Length: 131
Image (cartoon, rainbow, N blue to C red; front, side, top):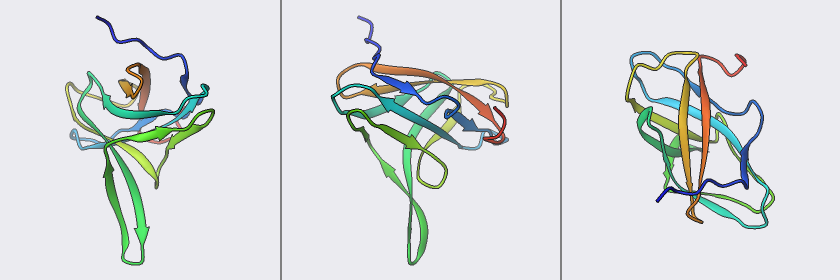
């Protein structure tokens, strides 16, 4: 049985991208998701056929400095968005399954708490300005 694809979640235009790093180093990914429904959703898992592992992290700064905190899920509030952006929440893409270079698109699947998925292609770039 195929997993149903949601129509309630979309990506804000030009918000999705993966920062390319050489030598298959872990890469950060960014995207702003919009939830048009009256229901809130948790993103419970993120997968890609292009990377073996995608993890959610948040950069937290305190008096001692900054650190990355791993999260198992994030919540998309009803009629709101959620942003994965530099310096805050972000995705870490690890262990590419094939050679990834700037100009490629990472295929990403967000698994939601209602059993549906949101699929997106995230351009791989060296800089966010390269739209």
